[in-house]
Image 1 (cartoon, protein in one colour):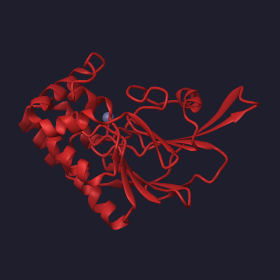
Image 2 (cartoon, rainbow, N blue to C red; image 1 turned 135 degrees about the horizontal axis):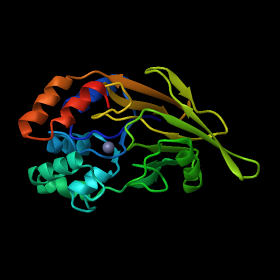
Image 3 (cartoon, rainbow, N blue to C red; image 1 turned 180 degrees about the vertical axis):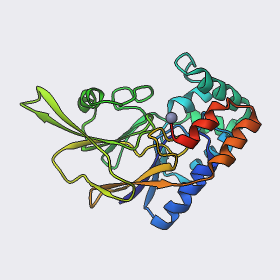
Length: 249
Ligand code: ZN
């Protein structure tokens, strides 16, 4: 099965539609979304509508649950909290209900999926080798797909010395170059962010997983950042949320 894996769309419809145009050419068997359809951006309703229709599966992210009123805003930055408050009254009851029905973690086709991490699926950022290693005991499949950090990276993991320590390696590949997963290692795989990349590349990010060949390929898709920045300003959302899209930070 070939699966297009998305995460962290963040109400950026322009980026999402650019990604879907590329995905249509790749003709995957399924589309999986790892959460955070809303938060930050100017078009939450459109993004919920598109994902509810097009994705075969979608997790809940911390922003989705915050907009649905299910988690508090205490741990959100001021700009993130402002965007949640702006989006809440602009979403239809149908969209809010759909968001509230999502789960932050599940196992599908023998693969673990979690928005943040298998250990703490709503909040944890897997940003370093220590966090990656600590998560190995929280999933028992070979592959675990995660989002939340907005970084297109993978962690290769293996227990050593009868489980006393975990060997970890960070893996990245340029867009279009395949990462070979046919090893005895286990993997935490992050497709990067569609709507607000933070790895220094402003292009929308997603990945293609081939579960038979056991390969993972990141893709980057340019989109009209200036149009989204203009929509963010016109909406009265914090201007920094538009500016950061130009640099992918
Ligand atoms: Zn996010």
